[in-house]
Each structure stands twice: as structure tokens, then as C-alpha cells.
Amino acid sequence: MKRLLLFCLFIGVSCYAPKAYIPKEGSKERKEIIDIFRKDFGEEKNKISVKVNHFSVNKNWACASVTPMKDNIEYAEPRWSLFNKVGGVWKEVNWSDGIDLKDDFELIDLPEQNGRVAKLIVKKYPSCPMDIFGK
Image: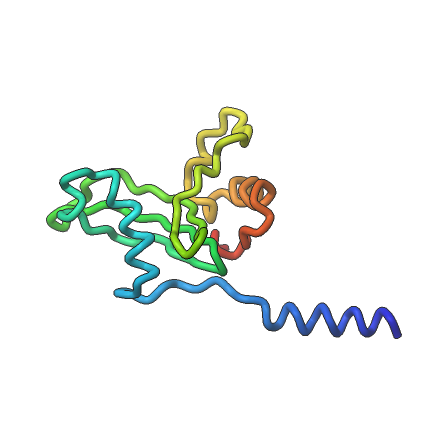
């Protein structure tokens, strides 16, 4: 009976657990995160648009990959980043600090392309949901 109760509780909680989603174009959340990518371009930042390659949010965590564009031409290399919402403000997370990459530079790729980096990130930040990294 105790096992059945625990099983039902687990199923009930997992059914209502938040799932990753893609923020809608034009939403405040999407703009705040995309603007973090733009800040790297200094005075050019207002002229930079981004092509979104991957964007996923769950709770206070987000993972996004973008290609910076200017005049519909690739302006810089595509890049991805991890974000955490702290005190109502999205901040970029320097996830690689303290993680031994073992000279595996493929870990720089988006975690959906290399599951090992996603596992390392979730191990370092247990509250970060794995589903923001994609399949």
C-alpha cells in the first residue's frame, strides 16, 4: 500500500512538472535573453539581429543558441549560452567555471549536440532542468 501511494504521488508530481517551452517572439522574456547576446557588440548592438537556432526555457533556466546577423548576413559565429533568472532578472551563467572539460573542445557545441556537456551542467547546477538542452 505504501509503495502504491508513493507511486501515485510520483506520477501526480511528474504530470504537473513544468516542461521546457520556447518563449514567444516579441515576449519580454525572449527580448531580455536575446539582449544579453547583443551586449557583446558594443555600439553595434542595436544593429544586430539574431537568428535563433535553439531557445528553451524551464522555470528559471534557459538555454539559447543564436547566430548574430547584420543586414541579413552572418555577422559572427553562432554561439550558445546558459541563463538563470535571479531576483527577476535573466543573467548569463558562466557554466564552464570549475568543470574539467578534459581538452574536449566539442563541449563548446550546444548541449543538444553533445549530451555530455548538458550532464556536466546539470550536475553542477542541480536545479537546472535537463529538458532545456533539447533532445
